[in-house]
Amino acid sequence: MEYRIEKDMLGEKQIPADKYWGIHTQRAIENFPSSGWPVSGELIRAIVTVKKAACLANLETGYLSADKAKTIVAACDEVLEGKLLGEWPIDALQGGAGTSTNMMVNEVLANRAIELSGGRKGQYERVHPIEDVNMHQSTNDVYPTAVKIAAILGFKALSDAAEKLQGAFQSKEKEFVGIVKIGRTELQEAVPMTLGAEFGAFAEAFARDRWRTFKCEERLRVVNLGGTAIGTGLGAPQRYIFLVTEKLREITGLGLSASENRVDTTANSDPFVEVSGILKAHASNLIKIAEDLRRMALLGEIRIAAVQAGSSIMPGKVNPVILEAVIQSGIQAIANDLMITETTSRSTFQINEFMPLLAHALLGSLKLLTNACGIFERCVQGIQALPEACQHHADISETIVTAFLPSMGYEKAGALLKEFHASDQKNLREFLETKLGKDLVKKVLSPQSLLSLGYQDHG
Figure 1 (cartoon, rainbow, N blue to C red):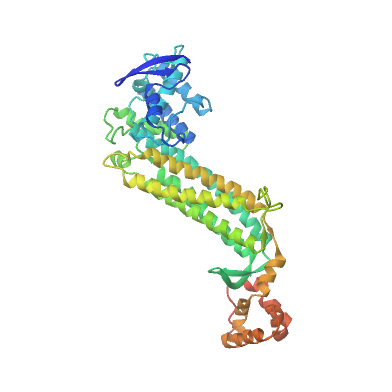
Figure 2: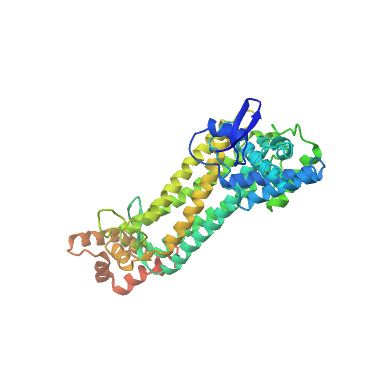
């Protein structure tokens, strides 16, 4: 392998000659063999977007020459188009509040810009990673701004996925509207309902998730770009500070807003905790509803479509593997919420030095939950109702007598149950038909009556 030599304040390092990263990235590779997790591609693209906005602001204010700005913007555009994919080697868990990631982007963009200007990698007199690509910036305003951009885009994707999942449940609600089944509370039989109503309740939960995730952009749109190291803007000209967020807004198409108090926005990461709580609520719904569907399949009320063989030793066994994957994704997102809370609460004074873990957890949860919604949607589309089993569970349940309380009262209903227990019959519905008449039983236990939201009081 051929190398080039680069220098910094600590000395010299060999850099693989064909790589676009530089000495700071090389040190980070050696310093942080932490988790094996790469820096999120969404975060890389968001940082590159910030670099492009900063470059255009520095060009317009006269701090960057047109030639340098042209090559830096071209390098940014290449990354945003999906090129240079193998140039981001450092670990997601790193010290320094994200400085290594920021410098990695600076170095890759600088070296690609140098090539585009006709030079060779490492000729930083042409385009310098810090003096040009990072001009008027600090990791402390670039990195959190980029995390917010990546998160906003992630929330948009999650909201769309939750909408589709909601729609899948609504379709099943209509399909199952006339199927009577027994409701359950505390894992015990409760009063009768319909399978459609049960799926409708699932749909409503995801409707709330969809709305909450859609509104998260409002919590993340205020950025501290231009605040440099601690939010005071030290080292950056006012003309740049006032312009750079406007450039970023134009590039992204997002409703970003410059913070009125960049010291606050640099030091405090609580908006990330707030939106993470919304992700946790969505994860809770995913887990709860996936668990309910697993149990309904166990009881024989629904059939989950087979997607793969379930056992390496039991022929023909099929498991609810999609639901299990959804549950695990939800558990991981809830665990990530704790990490986001911890990294925010443990930040000190004017900076959140644990931002890399926060970013990894937040963006990881967004991707996990978006993907979980996608596979869950396909699973729901394939669910089949088993009406005979639903009806059987309802017919033999003693709790269906509750539906007759308005016409006979608690004591008479209890007496009927006592009489049923003394008989040899196993099907309570059939017993009630012999005592109360088939027409009355059919009317009281019809889907329409069960879902009428109470009974009409003619008194």
